[in-house]
Image (cartoon, rainbow, N blue to C red; front, top):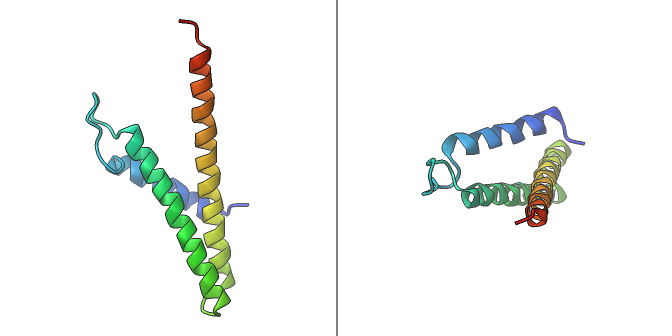
Length: 103
């Protein structure tokens, strides 16, 4: 289960992505971030969380890290992966709904 700190960090990261406009501005109408840029940022943050978790786990195995740091890193990775899976499921569901629409 995620702690309030992990959830607050996830929301802060999302707000930062939305405030900065993702990786790059979209060239489409509206001038907002493109879907691809937001997706790239989201996947990058999941990868970063996984790398941090791996680094903390190795450091703990070497006796250089605190158990609480490892648990926090693993929980952050879990939240990031769960969020990514939820978004993926929603995109697939939306695609299927669009495909069911009559022409």
